[in-house]
Amino acid sequence: MTRTRYEFDMTALCAALDAARAARGLSWTELVAEINAPFAFVPSIPISLSTIRGMGGKASVTSAVVLQVLRWLRRSPESFLTRRAAPTIATDAAAEALPNVGSERILRFDTKAIHAALDEARRERGFTWRQVAAELPGFKEGMLTNLATGPAIGFPRVMRIMQWLGRPAAQFMRGYDW
Image: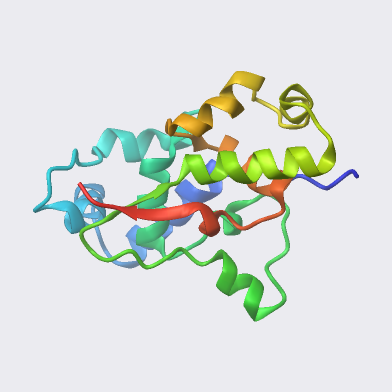
């Protein structure tokens, strides 16, 4: 089955972030402080200004950074897929909404759950891991199987998996304590 695939548009994310920053009258330093504010009293490593400002020029950005930016914007990853129409059914938008994980928890992907969903879909389709990787640009077989051990995954790759699964990214996000 051939499905239309859309790419996560990092440039659009950066433009939306800049527009929201400007609309609120924030400097870049103030913006970064707001993004990091929920984690001020927990043992986290704050996201740096250079990381935020440099996202648009990167081929891949860690999901830990992108998810916190999306959280600040109150937008879903799907809202930054190229050429994608907005959800037409309210339940689609609700399914794509970022989970509310509280103010002192960081939003992250549960890569073990992503692996389990990939494995289930792979088996249902009668695919090998190599065949799955062939359908997901930028992935090798080992990158997919290694998700079972919980490594981080970055954007835009994670959104290729979500589309292959046909599921919203929010289903695989969790709030993690420090």
